[in-house]
Length: 153
Image 1 (cartoon, rainbow, N blue to C red):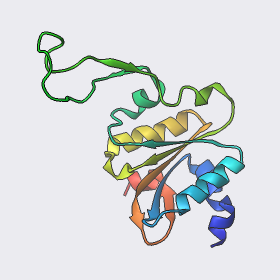
Image 2 (image 1 turned 120 degrees about the horizontal axis):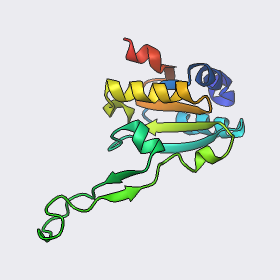
Image 3 (image 1 turned 180 degrees about the vertical axis):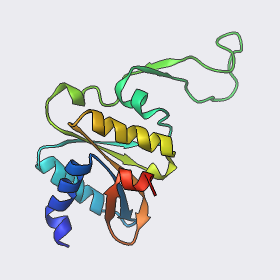
Image 4 (image 1 turned 90 degrees about the vertical axis):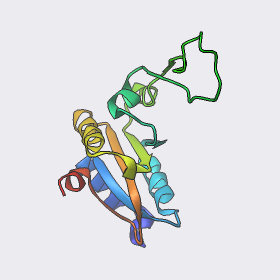
């Protein structure tokens, strides 16, 4: 239980690796404690679901277009069956304006491919302010490992 009281070892591992894969107990609670400890130590945090993420680099840092889901019968004369492309601002844009370190906590990370995990790992290597934690599924106890180790298994 000392891990959940301070979160110091988790923070040190996150700072050393840059990108961590974490397995949390399914009953929850451990991840919110770690997030609170990270905020208390000066990090700004943002929770993002990775479902529908697409290219992580574009989704997080560049202006990109999305198409809304098809909601049934639509006028074929206007943009066909594809729908209009809507421009979406980058998710991390406003967090990068300040000099504080950032932690992106990505939930449902088990749906990401190996190339998407590599892309997330490269983001952390390029910018030392950005740290990424990817929830890779459930476990009986809280455990984490550097993303490099998970990718190279």
